[in-house]
Length: 235
Image 1 (tube, rainbow, N blue to C red):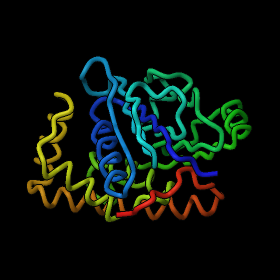
Image 2 (tube, one colour; image 1 turned 60 degrees about the vertical axis):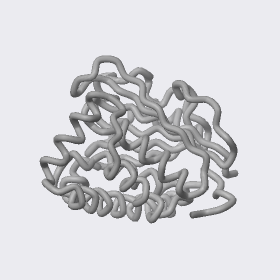
Image 3 (spheres, one colour; image 1 turned 45 degrees about the vertical axis):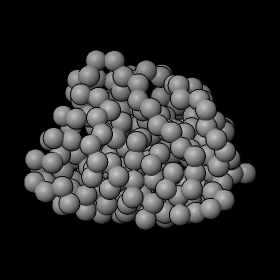
């Protein structure tokens, strides 16, 4: 049964843009007619250091903004979150709710037999895909990995449209947001890579859209049940 609100935990490493992805996810969900909030959690602001970001989306008002202990969805941005324990939450699926979803950015299956048994008992679906290579193929750079993960999230949910995602991405990159020093630095690197902001936005849109389609098809194939109920008024 679809829920009136969900919590998303995004363990990542510094420099991967998970803070940006969480912000865009909340903005896109808001555009689609949901209540939504996002917030980051990290220690040292340096590349490859553990980082977590959270997003909450619902058809009802959301009042809590702290750490997500019991997520409906877990998004693993880097294999080292699992293989080297570079995460504030271990094991990475700790607290995941029944009938939930885990998306792992990896080119290999990182789950142990014990992991698989635990998750199977909870009816948690797991998608493992090399979204970094996917981003390179679609956008020409690994810096778009967060956009691939974002598209995958909404492709699996199925209740936030591509136009809403587009608005979220444009809102983020056509305005000046600084969530942290690391995020500002990442924005600068991305802009230099593509030279023109509109080119950057289009690359991100194309990557998110392709990942959306891929994951929507996967969700149908594995029988992923609807996790989040649709908003009363869709944008």
